[in-house]
Length: 277
Image 1: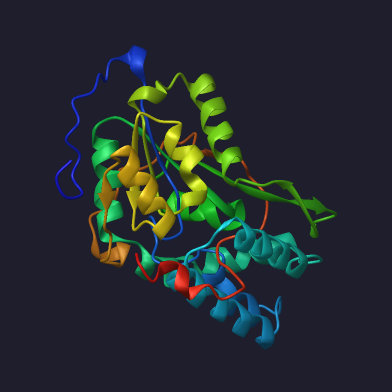
Image 2: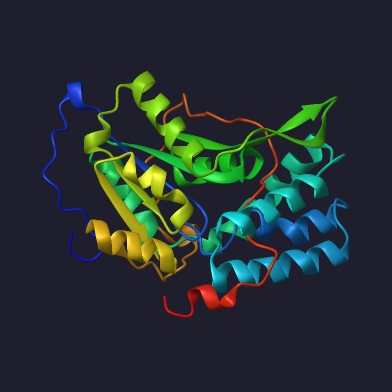
């Protein structure tokens, strides 16, 4: 691969269906999709100003310091406890009303180019995110993705309980990809995957063409060891200024269809993790 352009000669016959699997945060968009909605959630009466400030701090640390397993676990616990009792319809309304204003300016231009290349090549585009479907599914729709795999929270009587039904993280992402490949007939040896985090190594190893995007220090080492391409995305651009993406199929569906965005940032400061990256 030269730069961020695709240059593989792969079999696109019907017997070898292909897909491109994208992590979301810091791979397609420049921030945590979860934490980006903290202010709209405050305006909607869901969280306090203190929680907004805590989310802003977590966003900063996430961008600068990366996220290891322990930090992701802390964020999972923080977000699941925070959303307990929230009204699901209210969350979906807030995301729907603010999606373009919040997410549109954060999307990497290079990621959109890459998504378009895969779509024009006839590959399905699938977003695989630890964030939840209330956030991930609308973003996937906006980007023209064919499907999303995301975390889902338990819902009882229209409200989040604070428990997690399905956590799309690390090896669980890889398992979901393999299950989807079996169901859809994807030849994983000819599929592509993109992520910024070392926690997604299982997902990257599940396909024949893994790529590290803006990798954290640990993923950069793994990529170098395995000779994986490393891509640098650094140009967020408003989607409204771009040509419209190929429309997604009418059958677009989320593999995980419910749940508030859970893990997408970190709580404890770990700025030194990215000092060498």
